[in-house]
Picture 1 (cartoon, one colour):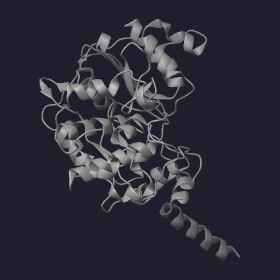
Picture 2 (picture 1 turned 180 degrees about the vertical axis):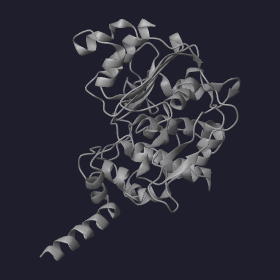
Picture 3 (picture 1 turned 60 degrees about the vertical axis):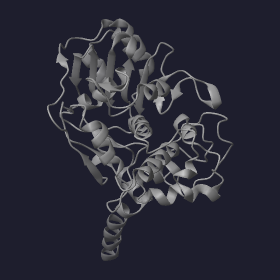
Picture 4 (picture 1 turned 90 degrees about the vertical axis):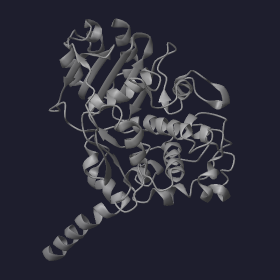
Length: 366
């Protein structure tokens, strides 16, 4: 009996990493260290690193009201599961702190902040003539979906999250779409089965399937070059990144980038993505992505079913021009052009803080 039990345990240990449900049980839930469990493609910094001017200090004192009693900025951020918090204005690093045993050079998974990066790359591909227009049907690039009833869905619908595609965004269900995307090892197979739930352009529904389809469109448009290689060429090698990074894949062999999530980098380098858009796609004199694309991606617009708080894979947290990238565990790149302000918050959990309100109020205090 004991021998049979031991064999069963060994069998389960070997089986769990090999299937989607097993991996979800083994790893339980998404973690900012998940870059360790997935295959990936590397990103490498090139040339002289760009560094923000260091003028670090304290956060404005109003922070206390978020925790009831007055507390220090460090106490508040650490208590609410933050691992990195940066405030940058006019290229000066006004605040930089790391918590919960994290340091400046520790890697953090981006989760859905990668959606905003995917949008940047779609803009670059349009600039480069690899994609003609956001008005193109997605079947121009993914003909496998032609017979699935998705012929009316355009790239713009995917960008705006108004595609009407049937998708279960729950991460708690091991058989759900989000779990299939995150833990599965064949994204193409799952993508080719996608079908409509409603007519496109009717209403906003945030689903990761839209962004993963954008990733497949980009992959097919690149014709042999990976999304990571394109990201390296267009952005990572030009923004003076300080550290190596990576983009997680669904599998080792001919892997597809998880464009709905899963860029693995450090806080300072995430901040540089914010600086690129703060400067309307221009990096120290070089136009990396067109100003028109940046403006279209971050404007307030409720036409064609789009939401007033979301545009082209960027969140719009107020009506004053701010925009941000956001990840499920409380990863944020918040940009407020009126004050040349960038805020980066990376965390182990969202921690029941209204970060949108927090950033909006903090931006007014500087």
